[in-house]
Image 1 (tube, rainbow, N blue to C red):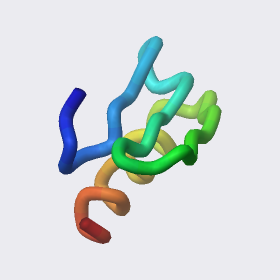
Image 2: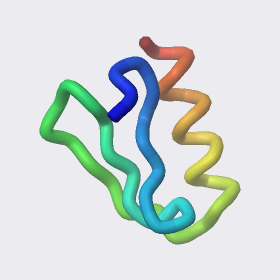
Image 3: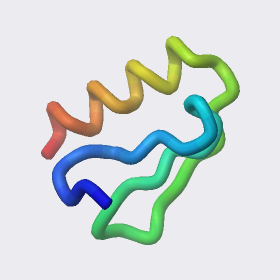
Image 4: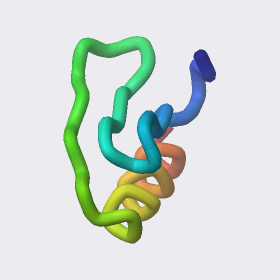
Length: 43
């Protein structure tokens, strides 16, 4: 698992934030990609 970026699972269905116990289920691929970018910028 990558420690520095969010890990998309099942084609942007489940978004797992590493080093935390947080996760989100995002059905829309564009929203999932944006969440990944936001998380990477946050780190």
